[in-house]
Length: 129
Image 1 (tube, rainbow, N blue to C red):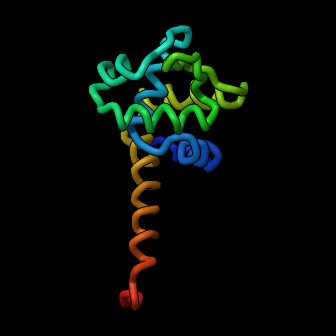
Image 2 (spheres, rainbow, N blue to C red; image 1 turned 90 degrees about the vertical axis):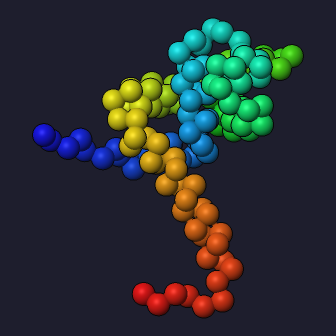
């Protein structure tokens, strides 16, 4: 069995900069699958089986990343602001279907690195190596 090549650094960087959680990934791919549909928070909560807080945070992050557009009255829909972002999401969708664990690790690994960096700031002495 051959191992798949790791994704290019540019792709990893896009994943890390656009997605702050696996919830954001799920929300992005859900809206990407139905780009003409407008979603409200209640629909997203129900569809993702998530909480309002998680959905609200994910929507805010994806709006900031230029991957969702605010349609007013609490509705959003998928709409990448550039062709590069649209291509990234198409590739992300494909990669997630073929290698979901690898994509999840990119997102979770980044979160863990931030947590480690934060906790290291409180160390009085560095642990022996």
